[in-house]
Image (cartoon, rainbow, N blue to C red; front, side):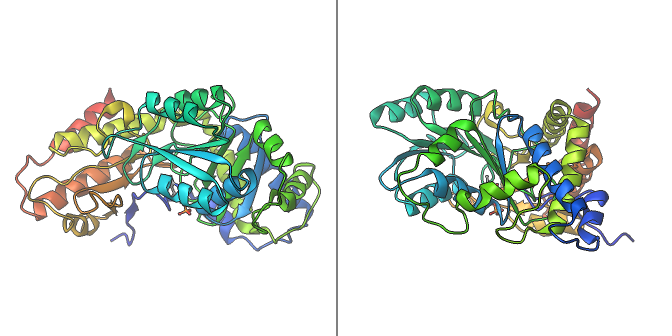
Length: 388
Ligand SMILES: *Cc1c(COP(=O)(O)O)cnc(C)c1O
């Protein structure tokens, strides 16, 4: 029997064998010529993956929360107005980080869990008082809700705000075109759709963000996060020269270069389309099994994540049975509905076979809880969507 589960959570995801081999290589010096070349190439490839040819990439040891911290620490000065387009758990976290650096934070919230804040309300909040920086969570990992980053970024820019997108659950999976859409900072972490084990904070800052950073009147209130320390390092490696501020996580950066190479080889448009197609198949399967989803409408549902409510009479004990059938999914996270729903991540190297395995395991889980349904209905709906 294969001693392996299919990991379908919103990060860490499953990594390709090539990426994992890079993690297991003998560690090189961080100034070895071959590492300098790999780091430099990874920085270039990040611009391609973020679709931001004019952006400044930062690759720094840490998790996605550090990537959020980097944006806030370097762009916020005490007393600055900030607006959080709030879709849940990670939007609240961004607000807490912004406040830590002295921002005056306002929120625009969705009318209900599973919905997005209305554009008119975001516009009203941008008009109400000066907003230096607006944050948007692209895909909220607690609800599987995706915001309309393109429209929000246009609004933010029209009112002079820097637009910062938390793309931790979206970059390299959900369609995000940083430069074309006018996003000033986009950020993610290695373990989500980028497909590298946890440990890298990844940020791409556009020219307006770098200008705002350079024009600061006060020092950055965080030593490790200060771009003053990191910018010369990123510029050095991009120019194929070594640099040192803090030791780079060498193997993770080798693995990052491998994964970005795979992403670029697939092509961003093909990658977005694959995520959309697999997501639609899984969502069709979930629906055919009679489960509602947390996102209130299809046009606010993410392509990297699915969040079904348990059917009536079924509870979180179902997830243990799903795991018994070889698939690991995640429990609820949003505090208001935590025990009423679960989450399935499908990003990165995910394939049609993973979607079918997941639905098969969900059907097994439903059956084991004694729920009455037609076995095979979810699989059939997904297969029909995959074949369409
Ligand atoms: C996972 C996630 C984070 C936090 O990333 P960590 O690596 O866990 O610190 C932030 N925002 C979103 C949208 C996420 O999905």
